[in-house]
Image 1: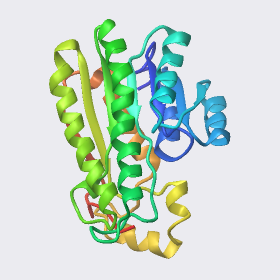
Image 2: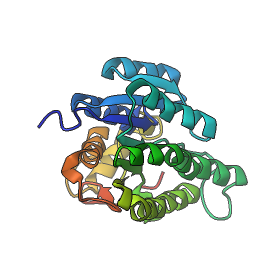
Image 3: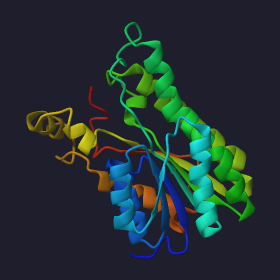
Image 4: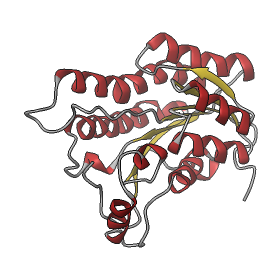
Length: 249
């Protein structure tokens, strides 16, 4: 099926690589006009050229920059239909309840929770003005199982609650809000952390016998952005090939 997002305008954060970049490609292939935010300017410009999208340097922890990203979509296209809150950051000092630093806690909260809050402050009124829209948040199955990074897992769990409340509070205005919760996905960032042998070990524990790739997540995000999911809201969709739920990293 093609053109499922024809005429829609989508804003994607964390769009320079990994899940965000693949989501931008898939949305553009389905007819959406994409506006992309990230701090990685080189990667962002590359994805924008590939998708015909607009690149906006965006530090999602800075409210003014998130507002500028949303406003760029509204200025260029006059509407906003889809928001994908996808930015993420792994903090080295994030480990357990004893060792994790204040910086790791605050930085992770800002990137995961405050970034979504900043984006929704601007996006929801714009969507409501046109009768609705779809918000998709990228969570993680680390929110449900010990994964070795307590701040990351805790903030992703909070993002799932944020998703549920947003769906309930703004559903009457035609706004849907869902989250995707991947297991371990083989992205460029993960390839800098793990060896091929470790990836093979991870895959051996997955029911479907392989690691997830960004396309696996992006396809679900596209579904949630499309009218095919018009009666789906307030859901957290696990995407992990049948298990295991999350790896330690």
